[in-house]
Length: 234
Image (cartoon, rainbow, N blue to C red; front, side, top):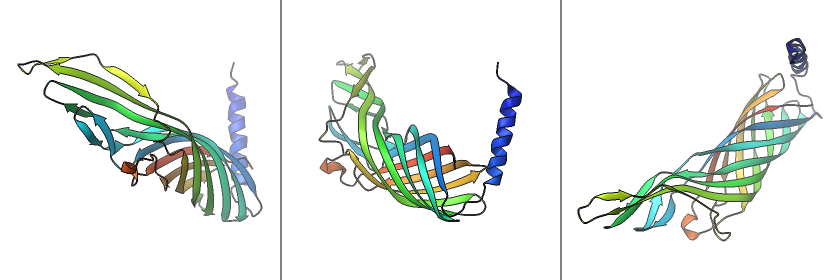
């Protein structure tokens, strides 16, 4: 049976520790595990090949898991350097679209691309007395897995123009290696608030590398927002 009194006493002890250690000092080391979500998309249209030829489809944000940790060292009471290791479930969603010719057609929905990365951010931080901090740095990563998923419904049209719909099919596939850019390099900027060792952070990362290697995507980049909650262990 859960002992509520002991749990409450533990929270009080942790809160007291957070108040006592609210100020940072030069030479301080911290380990900060974090977990949260990321929202990522391609900033450019993606080209799909269908029965009517090439079709440009707009990207929308895809949600994913972000989890990892930072190791932070304070160079000064208000300045720090940190390095982290994260797993990030990135990628992009795409708007539904339809294509057809005179006799048949198909509709594409729930279309998304998943790109799992191991990411290493290295950041410099400026910490204010009110618990706020801002960070800027670089982020390097490596893709470890990718997959595309979509729902496809086809139909045919008779001589009178009446459509006959087939069943919706779920399709999964992996992008060919020559299409994927496995190495990731980006610029992260973060704003966080710390209270009693609990850190709530919002981070934006703009990739400088292209998510796809094809010439058609030479202007495409990843745009990612990351929202995490962490706990500072000194």
